[in-house]
Image 1 (cartoon, one colour):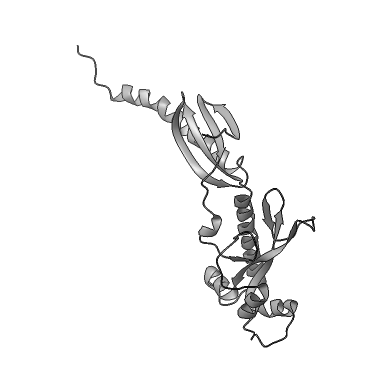
Image 2 (image 1 turned 90 degrees about the vertical axis):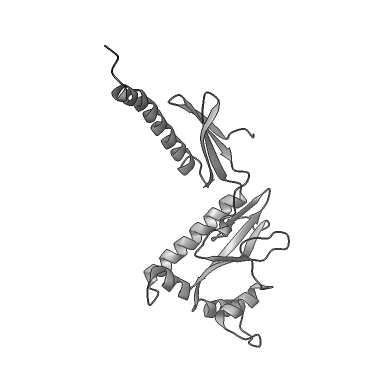
Length: 214
């Protein structure tokens, strides 16, 4: 097995944090948004049938191919039917993705969009109309989905193994972004109940034991 990225001794146990080599793409999950990208070398985001951003925006806006609207005007039309955020890719010694852009103009640029239709938002929130607050909440969800996908692209997916005396007692994988948050916290939470059970087991055995013969 690979070397752990973090290791600590805790209550007679050893917690080891590893990179998850078999992490599932978060785009396989049930996401609110659809991530649609165009790139010559990488397959990013969700599958789609559009050969360029213009074709996608025309379809979303319901505009015919004969119209001569600019890309900005097409996006304005599309935003009447969907919440759309730009998605940017940084490609230099690894991949990174966000919705606000990167400072390096040579190795980065817009690679696509993440979007959700207003109809889907209404169904998700059980509302008849999409309020400003719902729009902002939906945007926050879309941004969070890109943060998670960025962690996947950057290999920041982790798992823990809990050992005692060299024997694996528990393990869990698929923690995204910062291992010191959910991954390590859950591993530590696993250790404490194990100690509690071992302390309680002898006491319970004593309470339930048959009395010695007279």
